[in-house]
Length: 407
Ligand SMILES: *Cc1c(COP(=O)(O)O)cnc(C)c1O
Image 1: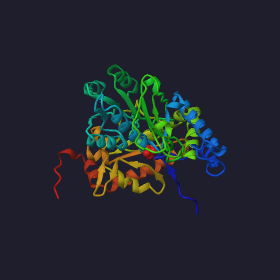
Image 2: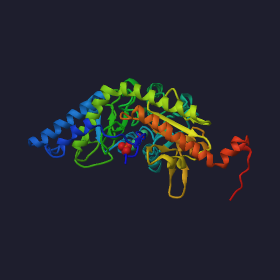
Image 3: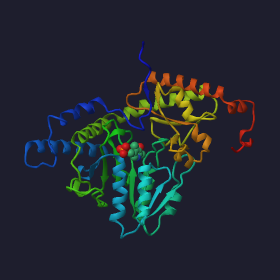
Image 4: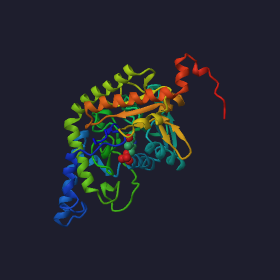
C-alpha cells in the first residue's frame, strides 16, 4: 500500500521547522544546559553567548541593533507587550490607539483589554482590497493618539499594507508606529528603520523556526521607545520581559532568521510562481472562482480563494486527508462564523464561507501544487454536482432575488 498524499499548504498557520534550525537547537537541550542568566559559571556563559549570537542574527535580518530585540514566547505575547506596554508607558501623553478591523486577534483582543482599562481604540475599516485608506487613517489621528498599530501583512489574505506611507504619517503627527509583522518577517524585507516602525512583533514558528519563541523589536533611538513590562520577575530582557530565556528556542529563531536572510528572495520568487500556477489552474478548471484581497500588494506565497456556491468547510472535508489548508470560517462553540477579515473586505457571508486559504512554504514542491489543483478541483466539482443552489445558478436563476424561507 502506498502512503497517502500529504500536502501541507497551511504555512500561514505554522511553518515546519527547517531541519537546519533543528540541528542548531539540539545541543542546547542537553549538552549546554545553562541558564543564560547564570553569570558565574561557564554553563551560563555558553548559554548567554548563544543567546547573544541569536539576537545578532535576528537583528541582522531586520537591520537593527541587537539591543533592540526583546525575546518573548511568540507573537501573541509580543503584540500584548507592544500594545499594553505602550498604553501604560505613555498614558500621560494620551490614551488613544488606532488599529484595523482586519488585525490578528492578538492585537484586537489586546485593544479590547486596553479599552476596559480606560483606553480609547479606533478600529478602522479597510477598503475592498484589504488595504487601509491613508486619508481615513490620517483623519482618525487626534490630539490624544499615542500609537497606530497596523499589521505588515494579513494572515488570511496575505495583503500588504502601505507601510512606508503609514510610517510617514506617524512621523508627521508624532505618534508611535507599531506593526504585527508576524506574516512578513523572514518572507519579505522588513526593515523597521527604513519604514519608520518603532515596535514590531513577530514569531519563530511562522519563519521556519520553533514554536513558543518570538520577539519584539523596540526602537532605542529616534525615538527611544519605552514599554511597561507585562511580565515581572527577574528583570530579563532589559526589564521589559522577565522569565528564564528559552535558550534552544532562541537559538532556533536566530538560525531561522539567518537562513531567511540568505534565502527569502529566492523562496519568494519560486513560491510566487507556484502560487500563480495554483490560482490560474483553478480559474481555468472552474467557474465562479474569486481571489480575495489585493493581488498586487500581497505576500508571494498566499492566495485566498472563494469558490462561489460551495461551502468551504464542506469542500475541505473532501480533501483534508490529503491536503492541509484553512477555510474562511471559524468554528465558535455555537456555529460556523465567517471570517471577520473577509467580512471587513466587504464579502457577503456566502462568499466568505466559500473561501479557502492556500499558504505555500519553503518545502512546497511543484508536484504538490499539481496534485492540489487536481484534488481541490475535483472536490469543487463534486460539491457543486450535489448542490441545488449550483443547479439554480446554472439554470440562470438570479440567486440574489430569491427569497429564502425563514426557519
Ligand atoms: C500567528 C500569528 C500571531 C500569533 O503568533 P504566536 O507566535 O502563535 O503567538 C500573531 N499575529 C499574526 C499576524 C499571526 O499570523
